[in-house]
Length: 339
Image (tube, rainbow, N blue to C red):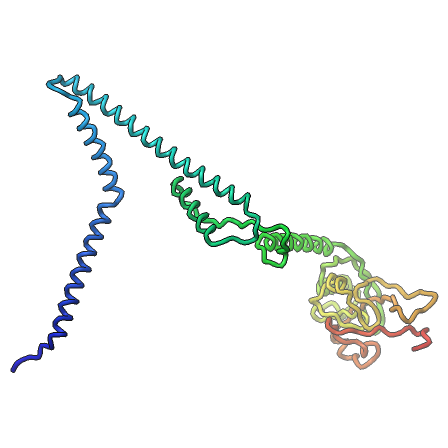
């Protein structure tokens, strides 16, 4: 039984593919061989070989007839010295040519910078600048990251609406500096002392005063109040700070608030300001309904257990938790005829 080997077209295509692969393989081998020949080591060997071949050739041409060993050594020293001088002169000439090319490129660039006053440039100019930069870097034999030169702008054109990285960085730096200064001033303000007048309330008032710092929290204040009052009132001897409340202007102030928070926000309660901790009354001779009353009352320190038992009785019936997002209306002056 005979096997099917395909038509002439398939066999011809297979031969072409085989020849193509052999050709690609040969080209790959040639490229590898050229890469090996062009390596730095090969170049160095060739330079040394060329140097010594030139010295040997010069010795052969300058030596005629029989000479002694000393004369041969002296002649060889002279030829090597002359060869080194020639190579030094050649290298100096190459360096001078490179430096001249660098100077010409810098002069062209400087001339273009001085004469260009437009706020745009053409692609040809960009290509020339990139070529000049490449020539300078290659001549100097230094690997430098290519940096795009700023294009000269027309001073009569308003470019304030354009983004500017330098201006943005300067603005960020200024903002950060102002933020640091503000935080430092607030820290100084928090350390300022102040007198807080309060009254321990158990149905009757027992007025006291303490010196606190503006940065202290209500919890710190209640703890200090407890330390002062514990020896005078039996019900406070076993109490903790969590069992106390601070009521100011009919507002129950949460313990995580600080005096600084109330002062900065100019917080107000039902009957007066929450940012004034002394006691004073409104002593105006002429009452003006357009102006708020400036009375300030002593805050009350109360046991939660007492509040739960008496919250249906005045004055605790008016108390409510303080909400910073709520605006509390100040009652009108009782002498106001429009009340």
